[in-house]
Length: 228
Image 1: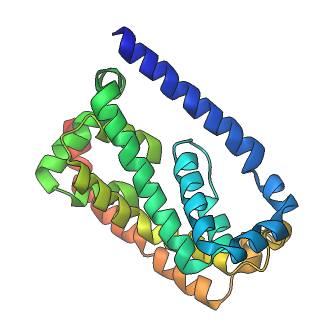
Image 2: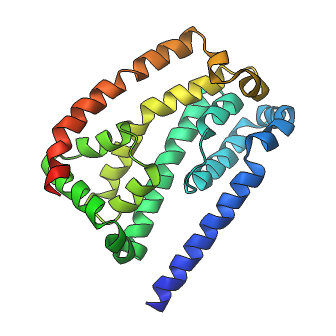
């Protein structure tokens, strides 16, 4: 028990440090001050910058509320490299959180998220991996879904690929938005709609189909929530 409490305290302390670092160094104002230097450093050594960027993205993905990362990475690394980093990082952080809960904090999470866990377990049993994909498409809370999944029976490989597939459409749009940016200052000054062009408009239009899919999935799985 003492060991688990110590691990929990340590985990929370790490999250607190990451949250502080995200606010201090990954805030948009801090990045704007070094915009030119950042792009020059990435251009000089893209692969090293990509590895560092991957580690930072994974760390930030453990911290709830750090939005806008995909846009910044699209701007900094370009569409394809930014997409690989963002999509793989989100999946890696999700799997890391899920496994940490499963093998360290499972009992603690089960006591606090019993209802959500019951719903996911029952729906996975009835509908298989498509249910986890639907949660990601429906934008169920990223962190809560990761925590709850650690206390379910879902296999780690299944959780990984369903998370990747379910979050990929939204990640594509945000990375593309960043890749179309001439500068971050442009986005700050003009807002997101000030950078919309034809490729981004097409991507947004395709993304608009997702609510229709999400509604169908929600209706299909509504009985699970009622039975929980």
